[in-house]
Image (tube, rainbow, N blue to C red; front, side):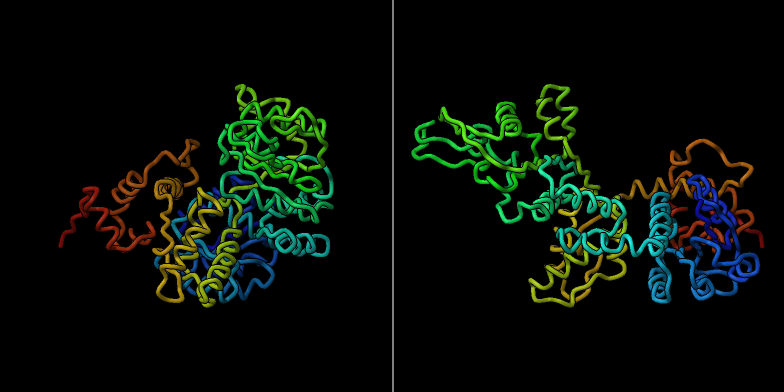
Length: 463
């Protein structure tokens, strides 16, 4: 069990963070200031220190110097992003903005602890991590991608059929090409076919070829794409869109290693390695009669699952930087870079279109950018505000509860407005407006605007 030290001077935030981490099987210790942490604990005994930037006495960044061997994650408000960036220059492993999203905090904690443990296995695993992006053309340092790289290297030299599954835009064709280029067939062609892009009436002719006069317009014989891949690799993207008739003929290719052109009575042998990809659930389609079950089991010899970009942690920034470098070089603008705010927006956005959407956003920003620095507005992305508000409300509600009043009911059902109204009405009798704003992690102006919008009057004071 990993041991984490939380250094936060606000008891309700510190308590909420402790309960969040303990629910996910972390051991947690607490401190309210830097000097309290130093006096109470040996900082080198922890796997991670999570500290607020602004603390009474010394700032949280002082822990970076005092805990030489323990990574420090800095928490800061949105208004202090520049300070957070400065803290990273001082040696903080990362920063996270308050109010933080539950999943965002847990992902950051898991990533940092995992990364900090990797040096213990450097000699054994460093070659894998180093070779993945270079020899496969795929960028990825996350554990999921490292596992994928290992499997590619293990599967590539074989003749086994591979099924690549993943959402649209995750880079399934890159994985197929990595399989081909790391196989003994690398000297032969890799033929890529998008099954969804070929009209149903032509797909058999395209895949298997046709003889002269096989149908109207067939003025000459034609070699099919399967035959063209002879000796190499045939990559069928979106294979779930393949018509049932073509599925039957493809099954024969897998079973007998032979094809018959449309209009021909003779079969011919082919030597192809088949790699297929889909974003659909082929097993469910087979149960519905929309995909041949025997073909599904023939395809699913080896399955490689490609994770969506939102589950790949810091890979999103590695990919964004690589894309920007490539696009900037093509535009003769090698000094293009992301502002800290743009980098934060890229990290926080969920990228439903995955790497393809990220590439489009970076290209758009590079084209529209007037300076060398890319700002968030140029990316054309908007975070999932509804989800952020829900997660913040859950954190805030849990912060408001003490340990003895904590409820087992899911806090995620409380809206941000409900929490805001509840908190303000309960605490405004003994807190100033400045104190209320600080507890909520917002400015006094924002507090006043929300009072106006929600119709919450300020407490009347007597002279």
